[in-house]
Length: 376
Ligand code: F6P
Picture 1: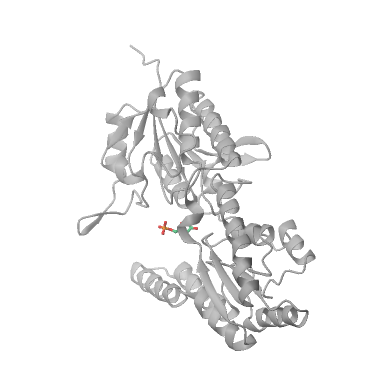
Picture 2: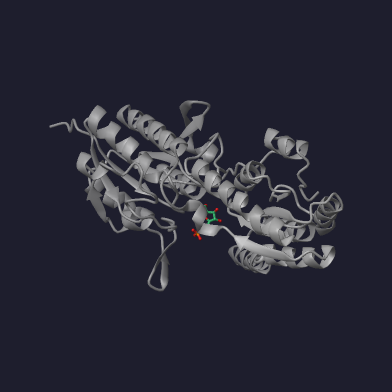
């Protein structure tokens, strides 16, 4: 007898973020309540999918999760085609296909960021019916105006910068605060503007120490003997930017596996040598300006706690739209947020495409309009 009821799996992968549970709930309630589907939730991202560890997600399981931070399913950063199992690295895609067959799944929803989009595309090309929902505090997913997780992180980081002004002006200090965002500057630019940072340093704009020091000296000369410097974790000075670009180019141009391996090892060592940038910058600024400096790394605080209203709204909107697509059998897409709409975008156009801050973005102009130093 033809199976009338669709059965769909859902998983969360990559970094945790506020709004994940809102998206699980948005998809699940629509899938179950509107479309009469059955829903299972795989534990711990791709690893749970490979090990076929899942729970039934019924209305009861979805109740009360809208406001909960993180993900009720757990997550991981495992990749399906090179999963560490003991001392080996194994291609688990065939096992994943078998599991989905065994579980009688019509579709699989992968909620995650850029890395998850690549994984979703890989599984889609392997023959699975895949939907990707765009989650990340970095807001760096192509064709998506805003990913859920970003708004809450923006609020957390803005409040932190607000609070750092107190110690800066009380002690006449330079406070260097490092924000997350991976290779994109959205979170730092947005929170830097909203929090009134005096200097904002982004991955998209290699900075010069002299320019940053000059901004601080000008402020001091104008009677402001303190400065708050918001630096994105991926921001680098000109030297380090060139060094990383060269290492990336080497990886891209390497043809044979051995050369590729060596190039990746070199890139890893370059990245390792760039760690602690915020501390190095603070020390150099103290030397250059004579003002005491201190560092705060916001880190995982930016990903914690209950989602704000915007992320609850966005997670619910994209989740529900995803359920409608699944009901129509429309797979192989990211459910992108564009304006107020949820728009299906082919995974091929999203996977591997990073959305960084364009140099003519209105936020950049807004920062410069109010005299923020951008390190250039
Ligand atoms: O992608 C979200 C993010 O928080 C990035 O901003 C950050 O660079 C990364 O995850 C940290 O990864 P992990 O959670 O594996 O330490």
